[in-house]
Length: 200
Image (cartoon, rainbow, N blue to C red; front, top):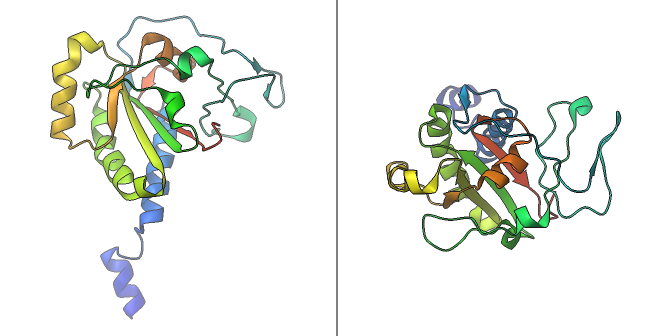
């Protein structure tokens, strides 16, 4: 009887671990373009990251720098994204003024979220990212939100977004080159990438 009562109130169903897993899975689904938002930037050619060798079986790396890789949708669709040093080490503009440099997060679990102020699904997922960061930052999780918008045109809107959604993690803007490298031709947003402590 007690067990059924717990289930009815939702206490046992939504544990912190289940909530975190649900958020990560939803973010990764969004990374594969299952949302209705598309980048408002002009179409760009698909980049070819340094060090990625593709064949019909499993992707392999040859003398590649640390990789940022989204989880595959299915084993047959596995894709490894390898970023060149000029993307990992580029200084990205941030709302706080101190530059965001992805390589400075080496050795930590990093969630990079690409978003925009006009994107409805981005607005829906932001409160969950705030909760995720609040719960797991003490365990080494870092979250960086990178707007795909023009920083000069949207500085005020991004600051207002941070205030409205009580964003507690680093926020800045992705350069077009960084966006292209991360998106790999999938222009729907939001997109999130989980980078392991080893850089994969």
